[in-house]
Image (cartoon, rainbow, N blue to C red; front, side):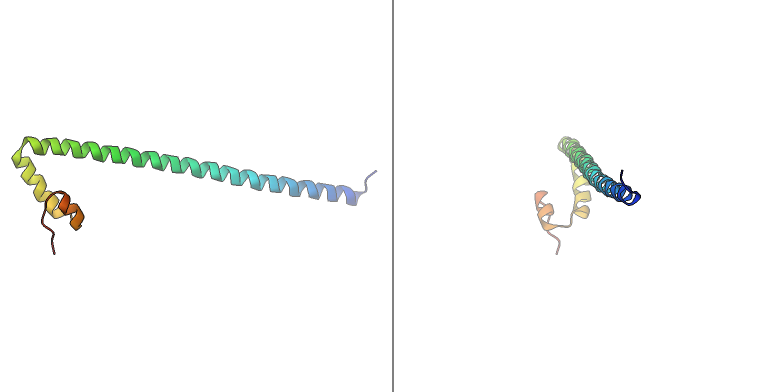
Length: 96
């Protein structure tokens, strides 16, 4: 029959093993959660990009249909765009 000390040692070893297993499972859960958050963010970025593309297509169709609308939007873009490479895309002069 095992002594009290042996039983205690055995229980301590079991507790340590369970604690290690718990830590491993928590790490695995954290990794799965992080992957899920990454996928959600990636999906939201895709949706936002799609919205912007559609908005741009809509705005372009309006600008193509009306010179007045085009002039108003170009004036707005002139004030909005700051970087030279962006301004060049719309044939706007580069501000110095």
